Image (tube, rainbow, N blue to C red; front, side, top):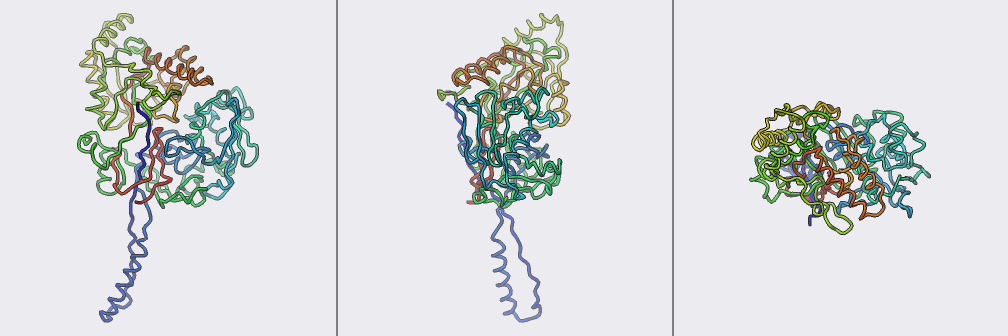
Length: 551
């Protein structure tokens, strides 16, 4: 059985401070010069009591440092270290006290009462209050915010109704009992709620600051956080720098002085910067996987997530279920994992990635088994049947779209080749820059397009609920009432065994109708500075720098 176990590591970079003193004794005797050199050496030694600086790569410009909006990997890695929610994932990837030092849960599992620390402060030394959470979570659910993470908060009483305009903010199950007591009412029991609120979308916002300046999050000099680090500088599309936040309640546990984040989008360039000492860790380029995968400084970690392609079921020929399934069965995922993506990834024969354990400690993936296999003969038969049902003499043109990346291009070209070889189907490729690609996919303007999903919290429902009819994460046009009903039951069922059964059935239905085509499960492969310890990479995708330190 495969479980999530954290490998902890720390990243170190050293910045030498040269101490230079003008020689005011020029022309004097050698003894005087030697004495001055010794004094300068002592100054140098004292100055070289070095800052602990970590050099990392963020890939590209964060979409936003406003918690409800920055719902992506280029934002939440930084946000997870600039800010902190009620709970925080610990070294074992389970929730532990953070802004909330304690909480109570009602016997029916509906009411959560969080007690915020007396010493929980913002980086400007304002106290973190229950009102800050009420304000932030209301903004998360406010349709005017257009948060891509709003659906996560539909667990809250009247959350979905408020988002849809059928209730007011006053109807939300959010209450500041007093300055340091925050009460949350849910629609139904959710045993994973403490996991949910570790997500950066649920971080608080300093209400007074945000009301005074709605763009408080857009620049370093106006940003106010409550996490282990604060934002010192931000040169957009180039770099940003964090420094230790002395106002953080647990500042004694923070050892790094500074974290420097570059923005380099290509893995090859990132690795070259690592080799040159400009970064302390790097992804491994696929073409170097065989050389580096077994290196002593390479760490491989599980990550909850899936790379997949979305069929637009509103557009021919993918209105036909059998044609969608034909393409899915034509993909050799083992070959894709071993020879294209590389880096030790696992082929995806289902949708929910390994690592989620049911109440009997069985892995979801083991229980539900392989649902999408490589079967060229079945693929040909399904294609023939689907074309006959649609009255196609020949298949309509198919365009496969992906967002610009050397790795995405390699996968797209491999898929193109497999469809040609195994189905005699020609597929055109197009790449688009991320912002354009993302908007067109959301608007159902792409016929067949690349996607990825990284878990927001540690429960299979997080992925499965993305494909209900009204989910902003669906992006396929797929609409299945039976699936919607299974997800609704899984989200409200208090019996854990029954809840998991609903999720098993939902995944099987997803495989039967195939609105998405799975490629591979994610992992985290990093080559790193050998002199580091203390960084945790959580399977849900956040990096933890709070305890990073030198050896």
